[in-house]
Length: 312
Image 1 (tube, rainbow, N blue to C red):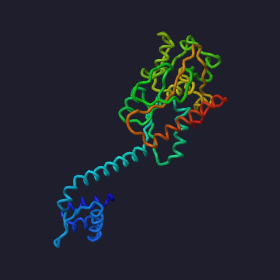
Image 2 (spheres, rainbow, N blue to C red):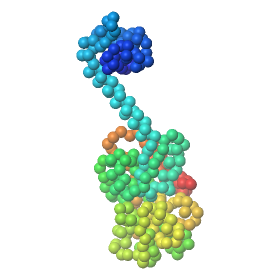
Image 3 (cartoon, rainbow, N blue to C red):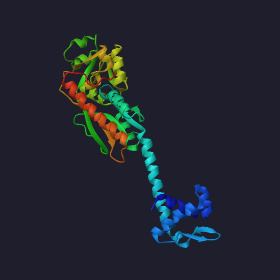
Image 4 (cartoon, helix red, strand yellow):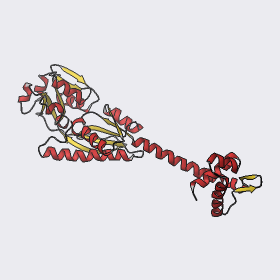
């Protein structure tokens, strides 16, 4: 049994005659009739009522019609699903809180582009809560999110740790703080401080770090990238995960640097997440795997004294 045989019978039924069905399908009547006859032999049922005036669907054929229609509807549903998956695989929507730009995002997108030149990657930056909502609602395929060690991850996500770093003070290279081996809380309070806006992980960390004390002056910004630019312009110091600063173009150019904080170590985790519900397109799985592989390579290179994958 072939799908086109069922499609031919549906056309005969819909159009009312073998002749009109043959014309609509761009087939000869004998070819159409023979195709249907082969199915009749297989099923042992006369599906068409053939007379001198023409051939129409038989009574037995009409009884089988709901089953034929069901099969065709199922096939059409399969085709639509495949088309949708194909379309989805041609556009991956990746959300990020920005702290992954330097160590992983750019190198991974570059590697993915080389391996999948026909698939586009749309990168969306937002706060963690917005990324989680978009992942659950299907607006994003993957998300790069930060957590502090000990934080609970919300339900409904498949979470894979990529990097584990420490909060550091990101300072302009000619700042007096750059001469110190470690930066204390008092050092941070003595300088203008660039802090992430409420809703970002590092805002929560800095608030906890300062114990309610206020710096001499502070700026509020969205995301690590703008924070690093403001530091490079001499507007102040910011606190970021070390993996967000190490290897940054501004750090490689000697405009910014980073120093450990003179406080108890707290790990910052960079993870990649996707929603547990729903299917995962092949292209999304491939991008996820590349993030995991490049994260492993980055950690190995940093452990060996390097900067990790080049971002520029």
